Length: 198
Image (cartoon, rainbow, N blue to C red; front, side):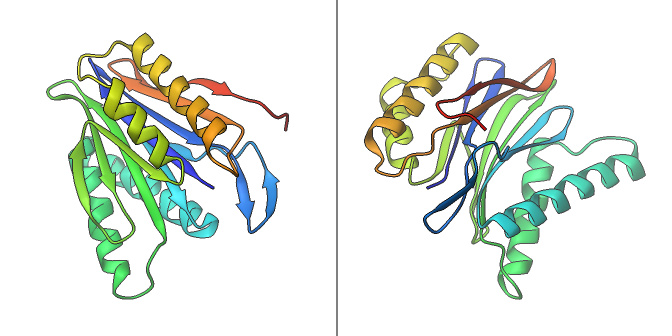
């Protein structure tokens, strides 16, 4: 019962993901970090099959690093999103990845941005996004309480409301969540919201 969601605020973007590694009715672990730091100013939250998620996110991370190494400049968030979309579209006709992505980034020139990329290579620039069963509740909460000029504190409060709604309304709700932020100071982990121990 995965859940990944994100939003753009005033001069920052935020990504939240559950931390459960689940297969069928078994919970294998409850501390799986599903938000990968692509580079100093990009975060990629991913949901989907565990193998596809791990393979695709690592593949993207290494290619983003390779581009920076070869060219001396990092990819913009928009360029990274389009690279991912292209790779998913190519794989769709061969051996598709069952992975959905919320990509958040920050550039000095354009500020924060958030991209919604699903497993069939749909790409949209959005202000808020969510994947998984928890998206029903998190999108409803964000539709009601989100506004584009949110401060970090307001966004964290809204993320906590979304987490609480998911925990209380979803039958098989993930218990632990990780929150990460990207802004002018870079991509970093903000906090964990735990109800179960490792």
